[in-house]
Image (cartoon, rainbow, N blue to C red; front, side, top):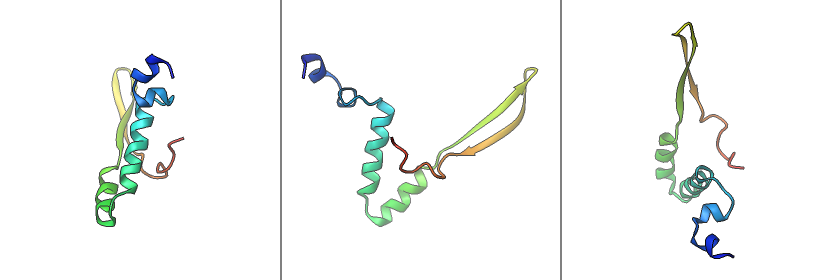
Length: 76
């Protein structure tokens, strides 16, 4: 291992982006929780975002998207 690699962040040395590394760590922490705490964590991990199509400088219709369905376990 070179001296620059030893001084770098672990996620960078492993070849991951920071977002991928942090998602893996969060998944490991959630899997180690007790059942009561798992339910609480599951509720907090919900991800929503709102988007809108724009035409002629005006937002037309807002669309709210839920990213939690089927997103678990896709860290590859």
